[in-house]
Image (tube, rainbow over all chains, first blue to last red; front, side, top):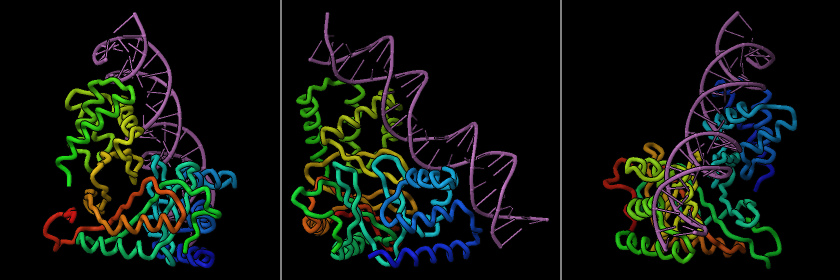
Length: 154
Length: 154
DNA sequence: TTATATGCAAAAGCTTTGCATGGGT
DNA sequence: ACCCATGCAAAGCTTTTGCATATAA
């Protein structure tokens, strides 16, 4: 599902920022590039700060500000953390995915499911609400007898 | 859906705590009573601290410790917060519910849906994982033309 | 040249921990 | 009498804010 959209997202991000009147800066650009490269599934703000520091770019303040900006422009989703840590992932225009968290390892695997999306839509209709976003988080353990990762998304 | 189970949960909590070798204390008892009364849908740790302080019971440290204990014993669920805030709700043995968050007001409404539960189960099976817990959070706005609250859970 | 982006350091929350004390059993 | 539960205060973390400086446009 990903691959191509990384570039498309990068282009989209550049365009939206420019249209919104933002100037370009080294730190935010670095955040954007990192997200395009590795942000297809949750990345914590702390991780991002750390990665960029290794590269000698950015500061905590700037990274948080950049992520907030991207979030406001709808370029990234903020994903709830169980531990008061901000996590982000790029808002992929091509597909919507959810998360499975392995309770033993803490690893997060993305997955997609059409029927799940459909049911969520019908639930929203039943409740009489207009849906803007939705998250599904499954927690458990990957079965030992499972050969590959559980992330075999369809 | 609730009503009866508040009492049952209270009894369950007392029993499990005793069986696990805990003694009873004023602060934890107050937390438990508050959860039984109002914890059927998310309550933040801060809220709990505040409520109990008004009643002249408990301190932040004790409340957090009590909630952690209840969580370890499986008596409450910790619900992800978008803002680094610990939220809890009682683990209702009778039913499982999810949350709709009104983006405008911040209000949280619980809802249940059988088909959603079923689909989540089949997704877990397809992924080859053993499910221990799952959360679904819908975000959006309640439609103006909707008469009552969106929480009309079937 | 002017407003924005950045970085440092300090502040602000929420949560956890240390330690002495009070209260169950 | 034990020793767990509690409360206060201090420490720890992540995230936010203030302010001076560097830099796009």
